[in-house]
Length: 216
Ligand SMILES: Cc1cc2nc3c(=O)[nH]c(=O)nc-3n(C[C@H](O)[C@H](O)[C@H](O)COP(=O)(O)OP(=O)(O)OC[C@H]3O[C@@H](n4cnc5c(N)ncnc54)[C@H](O)[C@@H]3O)c2cc1C
Image 1 (cartoon, rainbow, N blue to C red):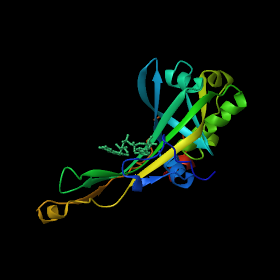
Image 2 (image 1 turned 180 degrees about the vertical axis):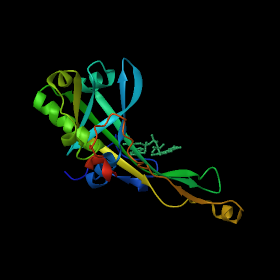
Image 3 (image 1 turned 30 degrees about the horizontal axis):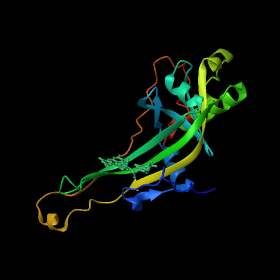
Image 4 (image 1 turned 90 degrees about the vertical axis):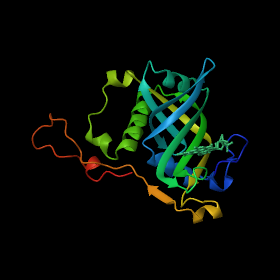
């Protein structure tokens, strides 16, 4: 399956021209986003919790403390909705009404499961670590048995998903172009700064490869 079937759940109703359902459009958004927001209902109360993720094929991995409600709920197998948002610019229309943002976003649906097997947990942690900084899994000390025990991992098979993308300049009402008001886009991007050592790095230890040319 290269694209998710369009159903009542994932069909983009508002501005469907901006929608996409193929994995080739959706997965790069998931992979570029450093974090996601997980939406779930617990005892009737909706929560939307930001967290780190990693993806391998159609599976998302989330990790956290054993006591984390987020992890417990996702592991329990109740339906969750996860969103990923990349902000590309501020769309400054001449009117407030047509002002917007340029973005690439993905909405994913699925049910989670618990990962108990230590080898599978290690693999999931490697996927998450590599998602954050490629190469870091090999550079950093691997988890001890105790650390692994203290970490809860949820795996979620992506059942359904959609992407929505806005790009380009504002689209003003024709008569508004006559107004003496600036219109256009302020492009935005996440900026990588110089790595800042914590002051306790051993002499001779250089900035690792995973950070030297970091980009997403
Ligand atoms: C950075 C950013 C800023 C935005 N600002 C606004 C705003 O100020 N006001 C506003 O109304 N909308 C805004 N949107 C768009 C917003 O995300 C929704 O698409 C829109 O509000 C329609 O919501 P709905 O529930 O009617 O969607 P529907 O089209 O009814 O949703 C149906 C299905 O479409 C899919 N879908 C909907 N939205 C998205 C999405 N963004 N990405 C991927 N799949 C999606 C989901 O699968 C959803 O279940 C913004 C989006 C982004 C990423």
